[in-house]
Length: 447
Image 1 (cartoon, rainbow, N blue to C red):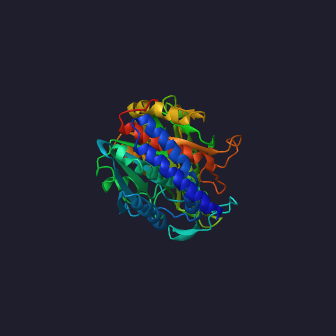
Image 2 (cartoon, helix red, strand yellow; image 1 turned 90 degrees about the horizontal axis):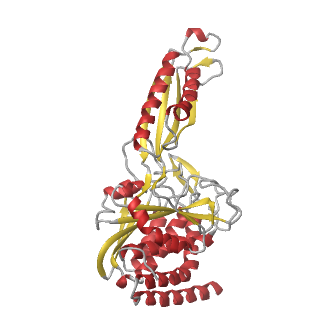
Image 3 (spheres, rainbow, N blue to C red; image 1 turned 45 degrees about the horizontal axis):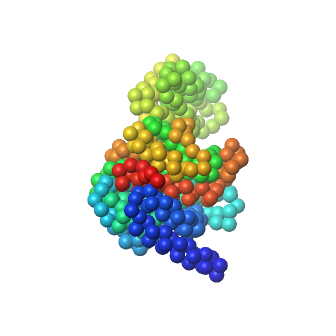
């Protein structure tokens, strides 16, 4: 009963705030009213987040999530399209005046991770990942992204008569990859598939904003940087072929195990000794290795796979060539052969310098007394938000969700212990609403 009373009180406050916003004469007044509305909708946003968290779904299987989102957006009077890129939702808000078009993006998928948070709304869900039944968890905060954008949509819908232009809400599936992902199949998913199906062209988007919650940063912190922010991500595999023989008679064959071990070691010299890392950082990692079936048999073949990360396209291509050359040359020195396959997955996520500079005053204003930085350290994680940035100028933010004093010890994204301090989510709503209002009005609002 108490929750119902609080919800009714919040809705009344929200209605008043949105009515005030609709009558606002200036962008500054509009963003101020949006802040009041954000506070009023905060409790409902957290309820959405907890519901999504308790019912996570893997990439391209976000059926329940997308239905909740689509139903909400339809109630707001937006033009809603479902089934985009399989389970994605695209909604368009048309303002009361002519103007540019802004897109706002949230990803929806969970991960094949067994949650161990102990929360009362801890996930017990399972899903199918690469043909196997696995536990599923929102271990990367996509549940918060959905809730933040749903709240942002409700606030902006309430002031649409006063907004010039359009707002496109992109609820994207499979940012972590589809649950049946296999590298090199040529299939597209997530942001790229949404772009291919017109999500950024109907209507044509002039600027796109997005955010991602991160542990390791104090709750409510807004962090961004101009230029490269998150790395490109590529997968690679190396197949080392030798000649099978008895383990007691290695000279009768060619040992692919030893050759593969030497290749793995050799690959680590690409970044440490062959690249100019004063320009940009890079990573070459091996994630798995397989070979042999018995302790005393030297096998014919060893296969290992890994990931490549870079922040510069020319350096990225150079790494690809060096991986193949290193593997082939070292294997040949042992009398073995090596075949390398590299698959590009996500490109570098880079913030448009002009857009970033233009919107900096907006973000500083939103931060207020909360922590912020406009020169955050680059992340070697990857994001397919990069696909949206190829179509329109983009700005991507990090939002801190670790309690003060726990930043250094907080479990990382993708951990079964990943934890979100929900007090910081309102900063995400404020950031997206302020960015949208200011951009649609031609620039940051001033008091």
